[in-house]
Length: 130
Image (cartoon, rainbow, N blue to C red; front, side, top):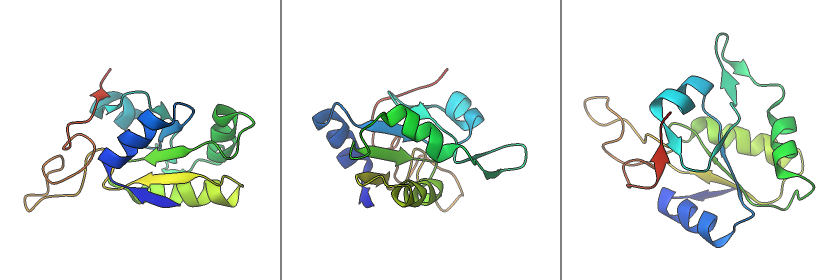
């Protein structure tokens, strides 16, 4: 697994049109907080029990098609879930896996707020909200 800054992840996505971008946050985060434009939502874990999604790897394999060497970029809120999800994909044979550092919302600031220190939205990269 390689770790990329949000800006470097965006550059890789632009340079590799076959790259698969996975937002592994919960469905509610994806829908209501927003998500990077073009990212597919495949939760690593989700409510109500917040257990690891037993179908995560299978769903990503389906989205990736036959190309296990296809670049797969993973993002979550802050980079923790996406790291765990990336390890699972590597264990399943994916060879070109990237984790987006600081995630979509970034690290907490001194007042415990996100989106003020780093992350996808903080860097002004394209995102959308439904």
